[in-house]
Length: 361
Ligand code: CUA
Image (cartoon, rainbow, N blue to C red; front, side):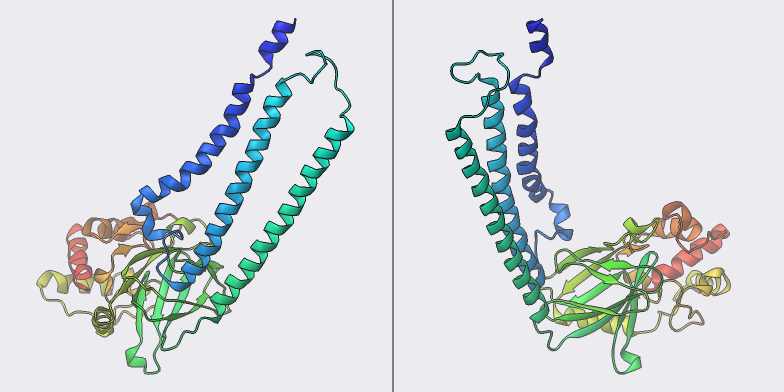
Protein backbone atom coordinates (compact mmCIF):
# COMPACT_ATOMS: atom_id res chain seq x y z
CA UNK A 1 0.00 0.00 0.00
CA UNK A 2 2.78 2.42 1.01
CA UNK A 3 4.76 1.58 -2.11
CA UNK A 4 1.63 2.32 -4.14
CA UNK A 5 1.05 5.71 -2.46
CA UNK A 6 4.71 6.62 -2.95
CA UNK A 7 4.43 5.75 -6.64
CA UNK A 8 1.40 8.06 -7.04
CA UNK A 9 3.06 10.93 -5.21
CA UNK A 10 5.22 13.02 -7.59
CA UNK A 11 8.88 12.80 -6.67
CA UNK A 12 10.61 15.91 -5.29
CA UNK A 13 12.81 15.92 -8.43
CA UNK A 14 9.66 16.22 -10.52
CA UNK A 15 8.17 18.90 -8.24
CA UNK A 16 11.41 20.89 -8.48
CA UNK A 17 11.40 20.44 -12.25
CA UNK A 18 8.36 22.72 -12.76
CA UNK A 19 9.69 25.83 -10.93
CA UNK A 20 13.12 25.17 -12.45
CA UNK A 21 11.66 25.19 -15.99
CA UNK A 22 9.66 28.36 -15.29
CA UNK A 23 12.82 29.96 -13.94
CA UNK A 24 14.88 28.93 -16.98
CA UNK A 25 12.24 30.25 -19.40
CA UNK A 26 12.07 33.50 -17.44
CA UNK A 27 15.84 33.98 -17.75
CA UNK A 28 16.26 32.78 -21.34
CA UNK A 29 13.37 34.61 -23.06
CA UNK A 30 14.80 38.14 -22.69
CA UNK A 31 18.26 36.81 -23.63
CA UNK A 32 16.86 35.13 -26.79
CA UNK A 33 15.09 38.36 -27.68
CA UNK A 34 18.39 40.19 -28.12
CA UNK A 35 19.55 37.60 -30.64
CA UNK A 36 16.45 38.02 -32.78
CA UNK A 37 17.82 41.10 -34.46
CA UNK A 38 14.87 41.60 -36.80
CA UNK A 39 12.63 42.38 -33.84
CA UNK A 40 14.83 45.27 -32.76
CA UNK A 41 13.26 47.59 -35.35
CA UNK A 42 10.16 47.33 -33.14
CA UNK A 43 11.44 47.01 -29.62
CA UNK A 44 10.98 49.02 -26.47
CA UNK A 45 14.26 47.44 -25.31
CA UNK A 46 16.23 49.30 -27.97
CA UNK A 47 15.40 52.98 -27.36
CA UNK A 48 16.25 55.53 -30.07
CA UNK A 49 14.82 58.66 -28.43
CA UNK A 50 14.64 60.42 -25.05
CA UNK A 51 11.15 59.25 -24.05
CA UNK A 52 11.84 55.60 -24.87
CA UNK A 53 15.10 56.01 -22.91
CA UNK A 54 13.16 57.15 -19.81
CA UNK A 55 10.65 54.35 -20.16
CA UNK A 56 13.32 51.68 -20.56
CA UNK A 57 15.14 52.80 -17.38
CA UNK A 58 11.90 52.23 -15.44
CA UNK A 59 11.42 48.92 -17.23
CA UNK A 60 14.91 47.64 -16.35
CA UNK A 61 14.49 48.67 -12.70
CA UNK A 62 11.23 46.69 -12.57
CA UNK A 63 12.81 43.77 -14.44
CA UNK A 64 15.79 43.45 -12.08
CA UNK A 65 13.81 43.97 -8.88
CA UNK A 66 10.95 41.62 -9.79
CA UNK A 67 13.52 39.15 -11.19
CA UNK A 68 15.33 39.16 -7.83
CA UNK A 69 12.00 38.73 -5.99
CA UNK A 70 11.17 35.82 -8.30
CA UNK A 71 14.51 34.13 -7.54
CA UNK A 72 14.01 34.54 -3.78
CA UNK A 73 10.46 33.14 -3.95
CA UNK A 74 11.68 30.20 -6.06
CA UNK A 75 14.48 29.53 -3.56
CA UNK A 76 11.96 29.46 -0.68
CA UNK A 77 9.64 27.23 -2.71
CA UNK A 78 12.37 24.71 -3.53
CA UNK A 79 13.55 24.80 0.12
CA UNK A 80 10.00 24.11 1.31
CA UNK A 81 9.58 21.24 -1.15
CA UNK A 82 12.82 19.62 -0.04
CA UNK A 83 12.03 20.06 3.66
CA UNK A 84 8.53 18.67 3.22
CA UNK A 85 10.10 15.38 2.10
CA UNK A 86 12.19 15.14 5.29
CA UNK A 87 10.58 13.91 8.54
CA UNK A 88 10.86 16.25 11.54
CA UNK A 89 13.33 15.36 14.25
CA UNK A 90 12.04 12.62 16.56
CA UNK A 91 8.96 11.86 14.44
CA UNK A 92 8.08 8.87 12.36
CA UNK A 93 8.12 9.46 8.59
CA UNK A 94 4.37 8.98 8.20
CA UNK A 95 3.25 10.54 11.51
CA UNK A 96 0.24 12.91 11.24
CA UNK A 97 0.75 16.68 11.20
CA UNK A 98 2.51 18.14 14.25
CA UNK A 99 1.99 21.50 15.92
CA UNK A 100 4.85 23.91 15.22
CA UNK A 101 7.14 24.68 18.16
CA UNK A 102 7.00 28.28 19.55
CA UNK A 103 10.57 29.09 18.37
CA UNK A 104 9.76 27.91 14.86
CA UNK A 105 6.53 29.88 14.84
CA UNK A 106 8.40 33.04 15.89
CA UNK A 107 10.92 32.52 13.11
CA UNK A 108 8.13 32.14 10.56
CA UNK A 109 6.45 35.37 11.76
CA UNK A 110 9.76 37.21 11.31
CA UNK A 111 10.10 35.89 7.78
CA UNK A 112 6.53 36.91 6.90
CA UNK A 113 6.94 40.39 8.43
CA UNK A 114 10.24 40.94 6.59
CA UNK A 115 8.54 39.85 3.35
CA UNK A 116 5.65 42.29 3.86
CA UNK A 117 8.08 45.13 4.74
CA UNK A 118 10.21 44.49 1.65
CA UNK A 119 7.10 44.37 -0.57
CA UNK A 120 5.95 47.77 0.71
CA UNK A 121 9.42 49.30 0.17
CA UNK A 122 9.70 47.85 -3.35
CA UNK A 123 6.23 49.05 -4.36
CA UNK A 124 7.03 52.50 -3.00
CA UNK A 125 10.27 52.67 -5.00
CA UNK A 126 8.33 51.65 -8.15
CA UNK A 127 5.68 54.28 -7.41
CA UNK A 128 8.22 57.09 -7.02
CA UNK A 129 10.26 56.06 -10.07
CA UNK A 130 7.12 55.70 -12.18
CA UNK A 131 5.85 59.14 -11.07
CA UNK A 132 9.22 60.75 -11.89
CA UNK A 133 9.30 59.03 -15.30
CA UNK A 134 5.81 60.33 -16.09
CA UNK A 135 6.83 63.87 -15.10
CA UNK A 136 10.00 63.67 -17.21
CA UNK A 137 8.01 62.49 -20.27
CA UNK A 138 5.63 65.44 -19.96
CA UNK A 139 8.17 68.14 -19.20
CA UNK A 140 10.64 67.67 -22.04
CA UNK A 141 10.42 70.68 -24.33
CA UNK A 142 9.44 70.28 -27.96
CA UNK A 143 10.94 73.52 -29.29
CA UNK A 144 11.40 73.99 -33.07
CA UNK A 145 9.17 71.05 -33.65
CA UNK A 146 7.50 69.69 -36.73
CA UNK A 147 3.76 69.09 -36.39
CA UNK A 148 2.16 66.00 -37.86
CA UNK A 149 -1.50 65.12 -37.70
CA UNK A 150 -2.20 61.39 -37.63
CA UNK A 151 -5.74 60.11 -38.13
CA UNK A 152 -6.55 56.49 -37.39
CA UNK A 153 -8.86 54.62 -39.76
CA UNK A 154 -9.92 50.96 -39.76
CA UNK A 155 -7.15 49.89 -40.59
CA UNK A 156 -4.62 52.40 -41.82
CA UNK A 157 -2.99 55.69 -40.80
CA UNK A 158 -3.58 59.01 -42.52
CA UNK A 159 -0.56 61.28 -42.05
CA UNK A 160 -0.61 65.02 -42.64
CA UNK A 161 2.32 67.39 -42.07
CA UNK A 162 0.75 70.65 -40.88
CA UNK A 163 1.82 74.01 -42.24
CA UNK A 164 0.24 77.48 -42.05
CA UNK A 165 0.55 77.67 -45.85
CA UNK A 166 -1.81 75.17 -47.48
CA UNK A 167 0.60 74.63 -50.39
CA UNK A 168 3.20 73.20 -47.96
CA UNK A 169 0.94 70.62 -46.36
CA UNK A 170 2.00 67.07 -47.17
CA UNK A 171 -0.49 64.21 -46.96
CA UNK A 172 0.60 60.61 -47.02
CA UNK A 173 -0.25 57.29 -45.35
CA UNK A 174 1.31 54.62 -43.15
CA UNK A 175 4.86 55.97 -43.44
CA UNK A 176 6.06 58.91 -41.37
CA UNK A 177 9.39 60.49 -42.25
CA UNK A 178 11.04 62.56 -39.53
CA UNK A 179 14.32 64.49 -39.37
CA UNK A 180 16.73 62.92 -36.88
CA UNK A 181 17.28 65.03 -33.77
CA UNK A 182 14.22 67.27 -34.27
CA UNK A 183 11.15 66.94 -32.03
CA UNK A 184 7.96 65.97 -33.84
CA UNK A 185 4.65 66.86 -32.25
CA UNK A 186 1.76 64.55 -33.14
CA UNK A 187 -1.88 65.55 -33.07
CA UNK A 188 -3.80 62.30 -32.97
CA UNK A 189 -7.42 61.55 -33.71
CA UNK A 190 -9.62 58.84 -35.22
CA UNK A 191 -12.53 58.68 -37.65
CA UNK A 192 -14.11 55.47 -36.37
CA UNK A 193 -13.02 53.60 -33.23
CA UNK A 194 -10.23 54.02 -30.68
CA UNK A 195 -6.77 53.16 -32.01
CA UNK A 196 -3.42 53.56 -30.30
CA UNK A 197 -0.25 55.08 -31.74
CA UNK A 198 2.81 53.15 -30.62
CA UNK A 199 6.41 53.21 -31.86
CA UNK A 200 8.14 51.19 -29.13
CA UNK A 201 11.68 52.37 -30.01
CA UNK A 202 10.62 56.00 -29.61
CA UNK A 203 7.82 56.35 -27.05
CA UNK A 204 4.96 54.70 -25.19
CA UNK A 205 1.39 54.44 -26.45
CA UNK A 206 -1.10 57.27 -27.05
CA UNK A 207 -4.73 56.61 -27.93
CA UNK A 208 -6.44 58.06 -31.01
CA UNK A 209 -10.01 58.88 -29.99
CA UNK A 210 -12.91 59.72 -32.35
CA UNK A 211 -13.99 63.37 -31.99
CA UNK A 212 -11.12 64.24 -29.66
CA UNK A 213 -7.51 65.22 -30.22
CA UNK A 214 -4.67 63.75 -28.18
CA UNK A 215 -1.08 64.90 -28.34
CA UNK A 216 2.26 63.18 -28.09
CA UNK A 217 5.73 63.89 -29.35
CA UNK A 218 8.81 61.95 -30.30
CA UNK A 219 12.41 62.71 -31.14
CA UNK A 220 14.48 60.10 -32.96
CA UNK A 221 18.13 60.53 -32.04
CA UNK A 222 19.37 57.79 -34.37
CA UNK A 223 18.67 57.35 -38.08
CA UNK A 224 16.65 54.23 -38.77
CA UNK A 225 13.34 52.69 -39.75
CA UNK A 226 11.18 52.04 -36.71
CA UNK A 227 8.05 49.95 -36.91
CA UNK A 228 4.93 51.26 -35.24
CA UNK A 229 1.80 49.30 -34.47
CA UNK A 230 -1.76 50.06 -33.43
CA UNK A 231 -1.83 49.03 -29.79
CA UNK A 232 -5.57 49.12 -29.07
CA UNK A 233 -7.83 46.37 -30.38
CA UNK A 234 -9.84 48.08 -33.12
CA UNK A 235 -11.52 45.28 -35.04
CA UNK A 236 -10.83 42.43 -37.38
CA UNK A 237 -7.57 43.74 -38.86
CA UNK A 238 -6.11 45.39 -35.77
CA UNK A 239 -2.95 43.29 -36.15
CA UNK A 240 -2.53 44.58 -39.72
CA UNK A 241 -2.54 48.22 -38.70
CA UNK A 242 1.16 48.97 -38.70
CA UNK A 243 3.25 51.89 -39.94
CA UNK A 244 6.88 52.90 -40.16
CA UNK A 245 8.73 55.91 -38.85
CA UNK A 246 11.70 56.69 -41.08
CA UNK A 247 14.23 58.84 -39.19
CA UNK A 248 16.74 60.39 -41.58
CA UNK A 249 19.25 63.28 -41.64
CA UNK A 250 17.55 66.72 -42.00
CA UNK A 251 18.74 67.26 -45.60
CA UNK A 252 17.43 63.86 -46.67
CA UNK A 253 14.15 64.57 -44.90
CA UNK A 254 13.87 67.92 -46.72
CA UNK A 255 14.43 66.21 -50.09
CA UNK A 256 11.72 63.67 -49.21
CA UNK A 257 9.35 66.44 -48.10
CA UNK A 258 9.87 68.41 -51.31
CA UNK A 259 9.24 65.31 -53.40
CA UNK A 260 5.98 64.68 -51.52
CA UNK A 261 4.81 68.27 -52.07
CA UNK A 262 4.91 67.79 -55.84
CA UNK A 263 1.75 66.64 -57.64
CA UNK A 264 1.67 63.16 -59.16
CA UNK A 265 4.14 62.44 -61.95
CA UNK A 266 2.70 62.74 -65.45
CA UNK A 267 2.58 59.42 -67.34
CA UNK A 268 5.76 58.98 -69.39
CA UNK A 269 4.68 55.92 -71.41
CA UNK A 270 1.62 54.87 -73.36
CA UNK A 271 0.88 52.17 -70.81
CA UNK A 272 1.10 54.58 -67.86
CA UNK A 273 -1.28 56.96 -69.65
CA UNK A 274 -3.71 54.06 -70.18
CA UNK A 275 -3.25 53.16 -66.50
CA UNK A 276 -4.20 56.65 -65.41
CA UNK A 277 -7.29 56.44 -67.61
CA UNK A 278 -8.19 53.09 -65.97
CA UNK A 279 -7.65 54.63 -62.53
CA UNK A 280 -9.86 57.63 -63.25
CA UNK A 281 -12.64 55.57 -64.83
CA UNK A 282 -12.79 52.78 -62.23
CA UNK A 283 -14.05 52.69 -58.61
CA UNK A 284 -10.46 53.64 -57.48
CA UNK A 285 -11.39 57.27 -57.96
CA UNK A 286 -14.26 57.02 -55.47
CA UNK A 287 -11.90 56.57 -52.52
CA UNK A 288 -8.40 57.78 -53.33
CA UNK A 289 -6.61 61.03 -54.04
CA UNK A 290 -3.94 61.43 -56.71
CA UNK A 291 -3.02 65.12 -56.64
CA UNK A 292 -2.76 66.61 -60.12
CA UNK A 293 -5.68 64.47 -61.37
CA UNK A 294 -9.44 64.53 -60.79
CA UNK A 295 -9.15 61.89 -58.08
CA UNK A 296 -9.69 63.71 -54.79
CA UNK A 297 -11.53 61.45 -52.38
CA UNK A 298 -10.16 60.89 -48.89
CA UNK A 299 -11.91 57.66 -47.93
CA UNK A 300 -8.72 55.66 -48.53
CA UNK A 301 -5.01 56.52 -48.49
CA UNK A 302 -3.62 59.33 -50.69
CA UNK A 303 -1.85 57.62 -53.60
CA UNK A 304 -0.04 60.64 -55.09
CA UNK A 305 3.34 59.12 -54.17
CA UNK A 306 2.31 55.55 -53.38
CA UNK A 307 5.33 54.07 -55.18
CA UNK A 308 7.71 55.92 -52.82
CA UNK A 309 6.38 54.00 -49.81
CA UNK A 310 7.93 50.80 -48.49
CA UNK A 311 4.75 48.89 -47.70
CA UNK A 312 1.14 48.48 -48.81
CA UNK A 313 -2.01 48.07 -46.70
CA UNK A 314 -0.55 49.61 -43.52
CA UNK A 315 2.58 47.51 -43.22
CA UNK A 316 0.86 44.29 -44.34
CA UNK A 317 2.74 43.77 -47.63
CA UNK A 318 6.05 44.85 -49.08
CA UNK A 319 5.38 47.35 -51.87
CA UNK A 320 6.10 45.16 -54.92
CA UNK A 321 4.29 44.87 -58.26
CA UNK A 322 2.96 41.41 -57.40
CA UNK A 323 1.58 42.50 -54.04
CA UNK A 324 0.08 45.63 -55.58
CA UNK A 325 -1.65 43.49 -58.25
CA UNK A 326 -3.04 41.11 -55.61
CA UNK A 327 -4.21 44.02 -53.49
CA UNK A 328 -5.95 45.84 -56.39
CA UNK A 329 -7.69 42.70 -57.67
CA UNK A 330 -8.91 41.27 -54.37
CA UNK A 331 -7.71 42.99 -51.21
CA UNK A 332 -10.35 41.08 -49.22
CA UNK A 333 -8.31 37.89 -49.62
CA UNK A 334 -5.30 39.66 -48.09
CA UNK A 335 -6.95 41.77 -45.41
CA UNK A 336 -10.56 40.61 -44.97
CA UNK A 337 -12.96 43.29 -43.82
CA UNK A 338 -11.04 46.29 -45.17
CA UNK A 339 -13.06 48.93 -47.02
CA UNK A 340 -11.65 48.28 -50.52
CA UNK A 341 -13.90 46.27 -52.87
CA UNK A 342 -12.51 43.71 -55.36
CA UNK A 343 -11.72 45.10 -58.84
CA UNK A 344 -12.49 42.87 -61.76
CA UNK A 345 -10.13 44.38 -64.35
CA UNK A 346 -9.15 43.12 -67.79
CA UNK A 347 -5.55 41.80 -67.63
CA UNK A 348 -4.28 44.54 -69.97
CA UNK A 349 -6.03 47.23 -67.89
CA UNK A 350 -4.57 45.78 -64.70
CA UNK A 351 -1.03 45.79 -66.11
CA UNK A 352 -1.47 49.40 -67.31
CA UNK A 353 -2.85 50.43 -63.91
CA UNK A 354 0.13 48.79 -62.19
CA UNK A 355 2.49 50.64 -64.56
CA UNK A 356 0.81 53.92 -63.63
CA UNK A 357 0.72 53.30 -59.85
CA UNK A 358 4.36 52.20 -59.86
CA UNK A 359 5.30 55.45 -61.61
CA UNK A 360 3.87 57.51 -58.72
CA UNK A 361 7.19 57.92 -56.91
CU1 CUA B 1 -6.22 50.32 -34.90
CU2 CUA B 1 -5.90 48.52 -33.46
